[in-house]
Length: 206
Ligand code: ZN
Image (spheres, rainbow, N blue to C red):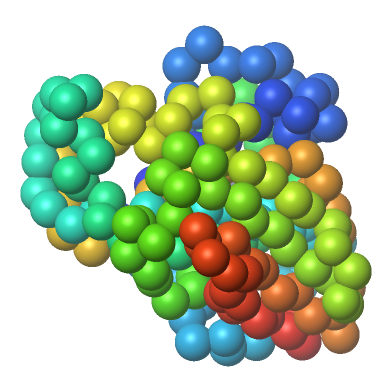
């Protein structure tokens, strides 16, 4: 399986990091070894002094496909979950300054926190509300209606380059409010279905 991530997909977040608003999706990948499942703790890595959380809605690809046409895109992600795209912001800045790839700032072990998955039909598919609490206080709140590139557009775009395969994960970008974490912090993500708020993951920084 592969983990595809979208950067700068919410205007407010692109602006908070002084990035231009992209005309096409900004795409990068994490290796499968980045996954952090089952609410396991995250161990703060030694190579960074500025680890940031980014809460993101995650699509789980449900069937294989290449060159998916817009009318069929919605069939490719029957389940959604929530995750954190942990980012070593200091390393990412150095990579950006040099025009280098971001992988060491984004794809390290444990950098892809992932929740359980829920059927998409439980949500308002064009307006999924979600958020993140740090130590009990809400620090990020987003709604997928504010994405620059919606789920269907992402499926169409990505499948031009990468064969989508069952089980692939697509991290769809983070809203504004990203920030640093310290050892001892607890991060908790939630999503709003049509009827209720569902707690999706809990991640303690060790
Ligand atoms: Zn991200």
